[in-house]
Length: 387
Image (cartoon, rainbow, N blue to C red; front, side, top):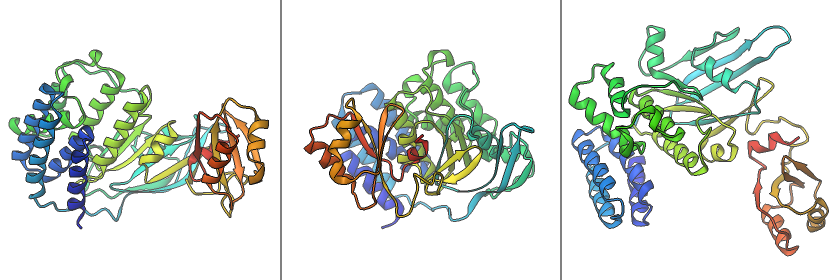
């Protein structure tokens, strides 16, 4: 089954199972890949109908299925994504003697892949993003950008390479007018400008906010606006610095799901690097996780701490509980834990490689231990943050 056929099938499954919000968002991604303006107009009309009939789930489901059937008939030419669009070799940046330095590190990025960038504050995440965005000059190393369209100047380069900092600038006028202004800079005809703008407004959940001003939007919707503005420019590489900051957990999940889907476009995939302190949420959508420690680069499965990352691999479990260390130690005595440490409000338990996670859960249940949550972090970058 081709990727487009599989994607259509997945959207249909979401609609059948009443996952309407997710199904509608993914349907719009399918429509966008067709670049068929008649379908764009139908999608815009559907978005408007949805906003006016928020409780009519049956009507929305049927309309979505009808649009999906039309979309499935349009052939999609898949873009290649095997080659690296960015190749950074031995990148190095120093802020002076006895001060912070980044690298030397090497980074290779492909289209359609999501790279999570994690690390404690002050370890170089923003510096790396700004280097890749050409905002900071390297003191060593080289970056090669292999974008589809050859760039003759730094301006050409930055039309396909977009960096969104944590704190974005204030803009004036309405949300919709600002988005239309983006396309006007590319000499897009008026009718096409209107249609593309409304499609992006609908895709990022901004339909009911399109006439609002910057001061009238929450932090979450300001970030959605920035992403909509960025995607209208059709970048090949997107660099996001702490896009989840100041967002509630639901907004974080929605933003990440949307980014993952949009960057995996069949005919216009985008390479994405995002930095965040929300490790668990980022790991769920990342194809790779880059961990920075003291300005040095490590992939998520590298040896960073000898006592944490070993071969054969240990089982490492994070547990939040109000009970004492003695109670947990007693519960695990048959599993022969190697260590049980208290780290930042949670316990971290290290078990031999022969122990499985379900055995840990069974031991906690048998001992009737009350826990808030538990998670296997053996392959999570969270294990790098254990003191």
